[in-house]
Length: 113
Image 1 (tube, one colour):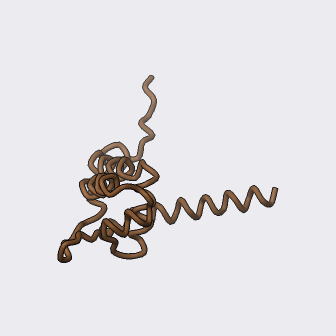
Image 2: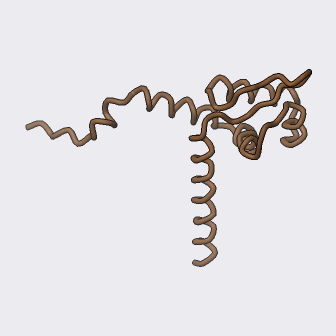
Image 3: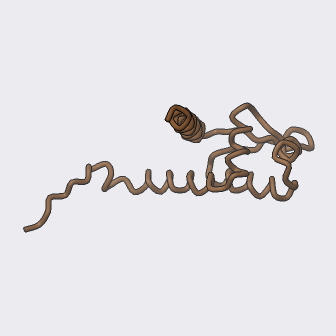
C-alpha cells in the first residue's frame, strides 16, 4: 500500500520560488553581507562608506556587493565618480527583521529562566 502524498501542492510544484529563495539565502550566507544589507536598510550607501562602516578592504566590499547585486538584492547607481547601492528586494529586509526579532525573543527568554 502506498502512502498518500502529504505535500501541499504549492510546496511540491513551486521549484522556481524555491530556487529564488535559495539564491537569496546563499547571497546572505556571510556575516559581512548581512552587515552590508543592514546598512542598506538604513539608506543608500557608496563603496567608500561601506568600507569604513564594515572595516574591511575596498576589494572585499566590492566582492560582497557583487554577490548581492548578482542575486538581485541590491542595485548600484553611478553618482559622479562613485557607485552607490540600494536595497531593491524587500523580502531581505523582512527576513532580517524577523531573525532579529527571534534573536531578541530568545535572549529575553534566556534572561527570564
